[in-house]
Amino acid sequence: MQFQFASFADFLTMEGHGIYVWISYGVTFALLAALAAFPLLRRRQLQRELQRQQRIQQRRHQAEKERKTVEPA
Image (cartoon, rainbow, N blue to C red; front, side, top):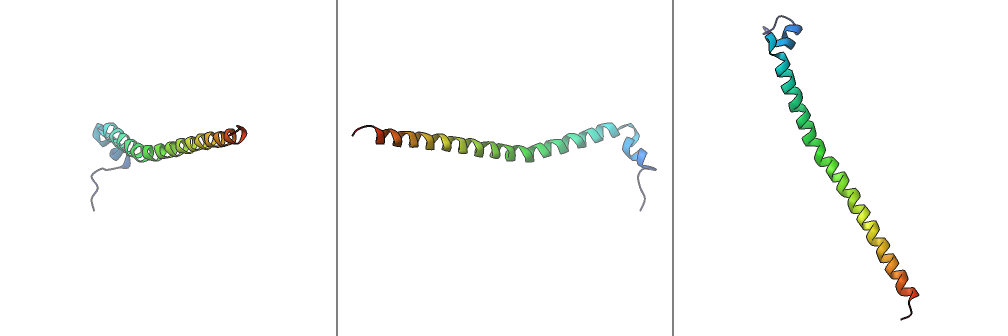
């Protein structure tokens, strides 16, 4: 098996084009990670919001129930 580059340093520099190649790889992997992470973070945020709304609704229901028992019918 024959390698294209004489050394690891040559592989990294790629005859002066290495900086562009590695930046491209970095941007690509960062975007892929973001695409995987954002839906997970959004799901957690939506779950917290739903729980908050449910607590508010339960408090309102409880307050209404208490008010009905206090008021004369």
